[in-house]
Image (cartoon, rainbow, N blue to C red; front, side, top):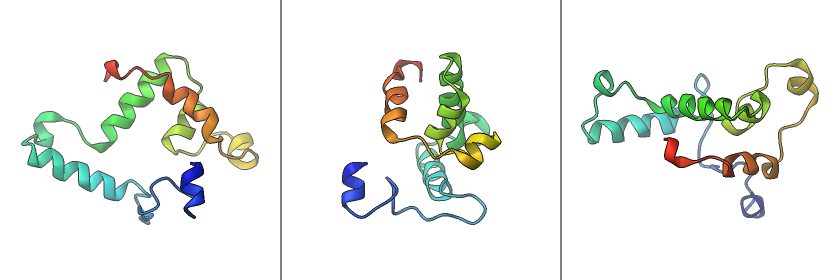
Length: 108
């Protein structure tokens, strides 16, 4: 993130715009659907969409007993509680990177 900030950006994927209804996931979701269709994987057969990866990722971290607040931070979701939702700031990248580094990609 240091290089991202040095380049004058606040977000890692600064080219993504925030869609009014779907947030920042609208464009990546459309991209995923196009690629899936190009590969011949129909949604009615594969039953996978862009958000399936988020579900798998969150479930993997839950099984590792990672706190919901940390998972929310990694997935870019707001925390549900008033304390962190209102008063707490977002996790620093260094805190989240330790959780991400602990993930075994073989489970996916």
